[in-house]
Length: 402
Image 1 (cartoon, helix red, strand yellow):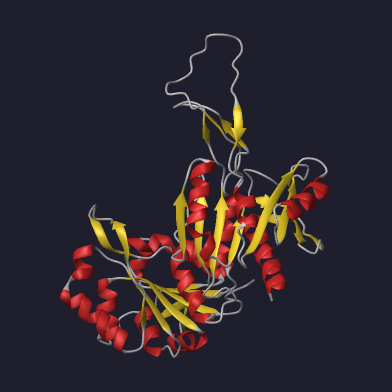
Image 2 (image 1 turned 30 degrees about the vertical axis):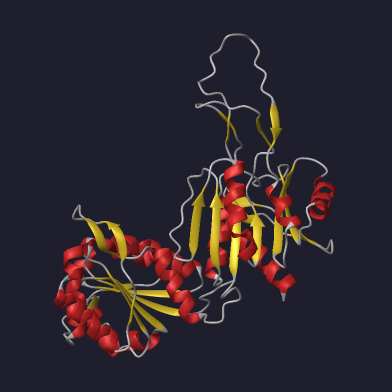
């Protein structure tokens, strides 16, 4: 599922603190299949090194009109660069660079390439909030927009000055999402709403202790990112996890317990097209949560457990045309247990993984999955990253749904 497969992206980097994000931006673009070349302003090298960017992009990084090879000057052809690209992205675009672009100034290689480019131009501004809000800067952005350039929004939050407000460059995955949307106007999940549960649930014993499991949320977050990249609007209901996402099409609802996850799922389930239960929801919870920390008073402690709400079974019982996918993490009789769960919970598919497989299961970045459709057809896949597993899972869902 290479959403930018073969696309040629020319990344222009100007001299702002947000340039520190550009190595991750290069990686995101390449991960999605793009070819990337980089041109920098001389000032940008104060914030990120050409060596880092050339290593990641697998291409030389250019920052001047000429280079020297054995004492012979070589011209860095800005015209060729402009013609090579399918899209030029300027990120970060500082106030100074925006002004130069708006008024046709050409005093560095990046500006020369911009003025020569025949491809679509995406601009990701980055500066302090007062600079961003200044009328002169706003006017420059209006001029650039009127010339047919696509101006990406700025983020809002903590800035390098110590102030807080609008002016941050979008995160690399957010910028990549805009580019993917541009090149893929007919994404397979465009206009679809997807619900995904992720991570563990914690069931409180007392104010200090809980019953939980080792689920990290990595699989659920990877599924959410892949779904969003395919065009979906994603609601991600996640138990406690260190995983994070900044994807503009993912709405994260953080919960702790199974009951909280159930309520969050119930709120949106009727309005989604695809639901995936990737969370490791606790099957039982303490019958009573103690008001105060339990003190050690004897060698034995008995805790009465009662079942939690079965979220996946609820979704199976209340299906109204949704595609419903479950997960089965097993330690024995794997296929038999997965097939029984598929039928019992009225699922359209189930992803089986076994704790017996090295590199699969909780708290690792890889997984080895078997995808079983409702017609009991079985598809086995090798050990791969959880991101690749997420792509495989949506390939299977889309094949089934087509």
